[in-house]
Image (cartoon, helix red, strand yellow):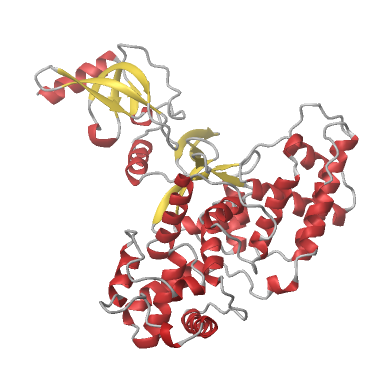
Length: 487
């Protein structure tokens, strides 16, 4: 067995111990469990002390959300426990009884929780219901509006829908406001026309359940067991697709969907109002707009871009757009001049996707790459379109004789001559003043350079530019460009 340092990382230790297993079948099982755990962590760095029952319960919920069966989820936890046991044997970790308890809790989940299978296209189908509602009439329109109103309001129960007052909605969501306007009547006490005065509570619930079944079936959402909290179930699953933690989702929802195994394992976590607001806004946006946006991923050590592409092809994963900035390098083989592509920043690539598709993507490739996150909630970081355009303009402006480094690594001193190679001031020359730390944001820029650019009259004015859009030039180049601009 290879000696291991006391400071060895969890990833390296587990990977090394898997490689030492001679039985191919056993090694394959351990590798499957390890890969699923790495995908779950999503780029987080953990130590052996971080292996708590709470972490394992989160992983169990993640597995069930990814359509793993109870048996497979428990199987993976058992094999990760075996790897963790090796760390205990070598004095790197302490005993953790959480593996066995979590495994038993998963296996003991009641069968009724698995009647309604996890629908990976749930958000797509709900968006289709949003699009279809304007063409529906009569009871079909009422059914669609009840479902959408319940889900977008955080998962209203049937009783709450039946008793919702016509003046009870105070939010600003355009779709919800339109639904309220469609049903509000001067002499009516309740918002939705369900004959509340003529039906008992049980009859109202049965009526709403029937309308829900009609609306959901119309867009291909098949639920053999439509419970009273079906809207809550769908809201929670959409929030999960937006990458919020199950415990935070339960904390914001205020109650637990009783027939959903994904939320049966974790305890609700107290979530600040800001987090709940972001969660509600994210769910509404995913179900009504869900635009394509830019994100950034980093390949894991020893993983090449070709391997990532091969995995995505094998799984049939299609991403709207991938941008892996490369430079062309010239070299000679014998007397022949050949060119090859080399990444500008190895392993860093950008991709355009809908926010609801990012989490499912990294469920499949998370062992090969991780996605950048931001904020206290550690949500996937969206790169603004303008920032992405500036970055691409800068990269496209690079030539083979330029020295290319990650943004912010050029060493400039006060008074250095520079040229702006992208953005609104492309082609302008100026003098470097100082480096200024900007607001915390997503790559590729974390700082700005304060520059003094001369105008046609020789008067200097101050601008801030991204390091990726600036290159150092000689005094001769500076004077030449300046003379050309004046001439």
